[in-house]
Image: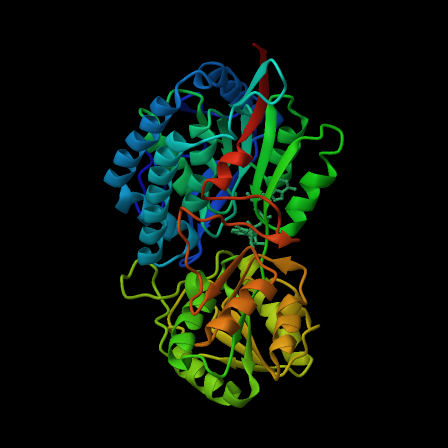
Amino acid sequence: MIVSNKQQFIINKQIFVDGKFIECNTDEYYDVINPATKEVLGTIPLCNEEDINLAISSAEKAFKSWKKVTIAERSNYLLNAVSVIEEHREALAQVESENVGKPINVALADVDVLIDNLKFFAGAARGLTNIASDNYATGSTSFIRREPLGVVGSITPWNYPIMMAGWKFAPALVMGNTVVLKPSEFTPFSTLLLADILKDVLPPGVLNVITAKGETAGDAFLKSIHIKMISLTGSIKAGQYLVKNSSDSLKKIHLELGGKAPSIVFNDANLKDAVETLSMGAFYNSGQECTAVTRIYVENNVFDKFVELLKVKMSKIVIGDPTNADTDMGPLVSKAHFDRVTDFVERAKSRGVQVITAQNIPSVNKGYYYPPTLLLGMNNDDEVIQNEVFGPVVAIMPFSTEDAAYNLANDSKYALAASVWTENVSKALRATENLEAGTVWVNTHLMFVSEMPHSGGKMSGHGKDQSLYAFDEYSQVKHVMLKN
Ligand code: NAD
């Protein structure tokens, strides 16, 4: 069992293959840092191709029997997984909090999402229906078989490691695939702990967890004839790498990439509610959230009032020790990311953008803390509007007409999520139609449910996570025709 003793993880330098933790062939290792203290939490192997191929072989071997297990039984495996995850809810959240630097209550919420996801996929898989079977040609009967793909290589990001693990492996497994899961090298421990927790629950080889650099895992997955699909949640750059390099194998690539969510606040909106929710939507998880609100377009005549209310709200955010239950916001995930966010804001300042920061970072801190930050006075083509900063930084701009607001919101390479604030139902409906995004929220932001899909358009990707739509990603349909 991996147990965090605050600074060191007891099982170090191993990956989870064929139902057990094993040593790797690699001689490359990586020290994982707690971003709130900058201390080393533990050390992981950075697998080489040989190590990754071992995990793929284990998944391929397991696939031969797992695909024959009935959906009802696979569903029961997921429900048994739920029981043990519930037993280890606090431990998983503690590890997630230490590794990602997220407040413990946010980490607990993430584990709860994982649990709800598994329950949803376990139940929903048993109610799947296919297009009607019938006699479509004279003297014949057609029906559809829904079949698994094989081994899925899943790659997750550092901002929601445990939650993304569930989004990936739950629909894949219940559809009869087996999985090699690679968490981000910055935040691997909750996924390794999950493997440990599930090792007596799932058959060996069905779920394997490796630790590796992104490109090494990407290359090994791309090269392997056993990997039938690569599912990535991450940056546009990583998505492009996989797509470019999949032209030989034509492997299925499932992509959930970045976002730059806009929110439109009309002058008839409940401003108090909008400020309350959009403050959470901008600064939750330190803004390291693909659907975080990053651009708020506020109608001219309520712009100043909105900014003043948001400034007050920002100043009340409790920043500090992620292990403390009262903490709202922890540090950024790493020094490199801290520098990246800092540089974005400094460059904006040098272009004359007004930067307002909340002064609520504890004066005594050792971590990569970045304050809630509001940007004013930029154009829509500014890099802080067009690119993902992925920190607690939100830009606010005025607009004068409904069409102008949609144009500003849609002027982006991303199309993951958006929200609109208005008390006018017709206007809200028009916004849901006009906004280019995989999710449009009305009078709310950053709400997810297992029953509804999470996906983007444009360069935010094209995969579907969550919901019944995820089953289509992790299965293929076969037409069977019988002569009567
Ligand atoms: P990243 O792309 O750097 O890394 C994500 C994962 O991909 C990591 O496991 C990494 O090791 C791996 N990776 C990196 N390069 C790779 C390559 N060439 N081939 C294969 N794998 C590779 O992204 P990140 O910094 O960890 O995460 C932040 C990004 O993820 C942001 O862009 C964010 O918007 C996005 N994200 C999207 C969603 C979504 O659902 N759309 C959810 C969370 C995060």
